[in-house]
Structure formats: structure tokens, C-alpha cells
Image (tube, rainbow, N blue to C red; front, side, top):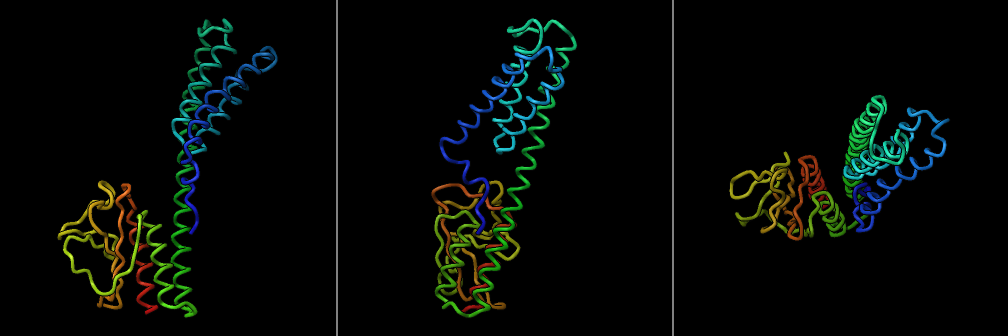
Length: 251
């Protein structure tokens, strides 16, 4: 499946590095622009500094975008408004320019973050579709033994639901404590629907994804999510059930 775009930035060094760069880049840029402040208009300097805010926000880290916006405003004041090399502003036009720089930077940062989230969602949908198509293709071609299809589907369900483990069990679910996922993506436990978006997948019991052939339940996948809180969307949960149905066709 396609790799989630949010995975690689989680390295421990990544976010601190981005945030440090978000603070330093506007400082260095404003310092360089100050050497040519007589020939570079203030409006041009503002646009150059906003570029760093966009770059920081495009990483998907909101705090980095905010830090870049604040840094840009502060160093614009320090290097490019009179009196120079002081955090004070004497001219009303410079005050307006500084305020606009910060406000515009924050607005652009939010727009960049919105685009980043949209890109993430598109990548996830593509990954889910690839998984379903791969499983369906394996079943249709009939080249893989049922046990292999089960293993492939189990891995994909585990990825989609952000679970720790997933294994297949023959027959219907017989333990009332196990939460069961239906075709509408609704998770039910002890007769009550679980608000997955709010509370996440149950961490103290198994989650079952039934494998149905018509009205008959021929088996189910048992998942655990004990090491972390997982909040799969309803779309993800429905994809997991659709993947499980491929096993019924292979057996």
C-alpha cells in the first residue's frame, strides 16, 4: 500500500530541525536584505520572507509555520524598519507592513497546511484502493493459495485500521466482549456502537472484522490495538470490511 505521507516526518530529529530552520531562515534572510535595504522595497522584502513561512507550513507542522511567521515579523522589524537593529518601529507605515506580514504569513501557513492535509487524504485513499485491488486481483487470478490470500489481507487490514496485529479465525464471533465491525463501518461492542472517532479502537479487547459469504459468516479477522490509540476513519473501517470479503471469495 502507498506509504502515508505523515509517516516519515515522525523521526525524532525531524520536527525540531524544521522548527529551528523556521526560526533561523527569516533571520538570515532579513539580515541579508538589510545590506541592500536602500535598493530593495519593503514590499519585496515582505514577499521574500513569506516564502519561508510557506515552506515551513508545507512540511505539515503547524507550529513550524507559526514560528516562521513570528520570526519573519520580528526580524523584518529589527533589520528593515527604522530605527534599525532595534525591536521598535517609528513609522506608522512600517507598523502596518509588519502587522500585515505576520497576518498574511499566518493565513498563508493555514492554507499550506490545508493543502498538505488534502494531499495526505488523497494518498491514503489511493493506498486503500491499491490494497483492495491487489486482494481482488489475487482472488480473481486464483494463483495464490487461500492461506496466502488470508495473510495478505490480514496485513492490509492491519495497516488500514492502524492495528498492532491481525489474524484470521474460522467461524463467527462467539465472544460478546469482542467489538465487531459491520459493512457500514460501525463498530459494535456489547450491543452498543463505539464512537471510534472520539475514543479510538478498544485497547482492552479484540476487534473482529467478519468474513461473510452471502448471509453466512465463514470466519473473521481478530485485531489488537493495545500499544497505541488508533482512530481509523469510517472510510478506513469500511475498506477493512471490503478487504475481509475478498477472503470469502478465495476459500
